[in-house]
Length: 465
Image (cartoon, rainbow, N blue to C red; front, side, top):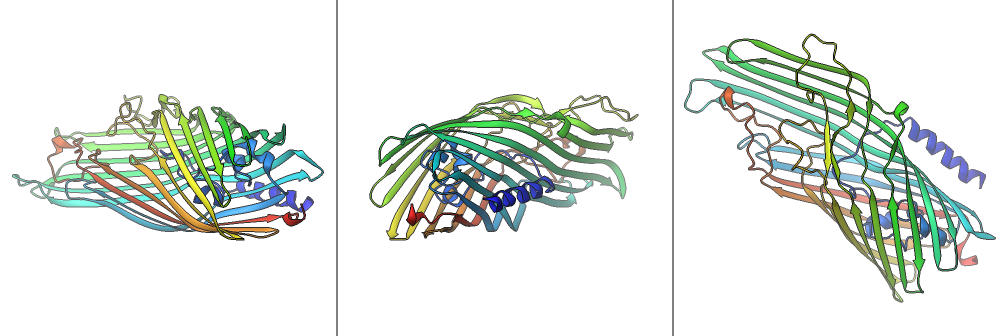
């Protein structure tokens, strides 16, 4: 047991020195545990592995043996294409390979006193990197003027949690539990847009817009759950997650923005904002989930419904007074905005035993984008992510289980499609008077493939229980 706690302390220290980044526009993009991933995130009340610390801590009461587990994306490949995303006929494209750990966890309890159990985990909820780059140059139609534009957007988004779950088995069929989370967010965003207008080899207008945000936040929150194994076939669960409590002394960010323009009067205008070590305040919604499981002789069926409250529009930075002589008159110049609409997601999964020691797993879940575009201006408002499409996740894999080891492997496919959204930028050769013009003629395709591997080691041979 000492070794088990040593493993936890090591990874706790590892997590504390690893850079972390902020939440995207999805709640269910990353599921936890190999079972959870390949069953579409549907398992909750019936989760009897360490992933229950994330899905429903009440289910931890039904864990069979002390154990330690590790789940990772062995390989992740992402492809996206936003047709007309940077102007008419100017697409934004990208693809990327990466690997990332998802969850390291363990459960400890006395086999002679199985009613009370403690589970610990380091969980990765989000780990995304993206870059959009595009350029265009050409003659403006019906004029002798020439246009040249460049756009680059880089983001690294990550959200990690350190979790301690405690559970108590009230009876042979009912477990209640609470998970204590330390939630770690942050982001590194850089956005550059350069546009120049030329007539007779003379620059008539230009606009250079530079944005950089380094966002960090640490907060506390809790998930409370109950799991009821009604009989050998049916299990039902409910859990809810509280809003977070911000730890201000660990939640400080830096934001810088500089705009320089040469307008139609020939005057050079400059606006500068430098916000250093300002307090961060990213808000999480109230969430509640219902889960249902049904087991036959060889097959387990699971379903999960998640409800997420809305969050009204707010700025994530507590801005200070500016010191620059080029300070903008616009209070929102360097602010970043978030507005969440209410969301309901569903997940379903099937696990079927094909031979004595092998199961196959399949799953599906929705993952609707929570960004409330009715309250966020896609042109004027700075925001953390340009993702505006909904996601759908399909998964399949297999599980081999022995007396002390479980090994699970499979593939998760994430798909997102969207039509007629506002362009991310506009580099179309056009007059300077149309500098803020954006069209809504985009077509987006997003695909991600994740090769999942999960290993669980049981400290007690399960055949001897």
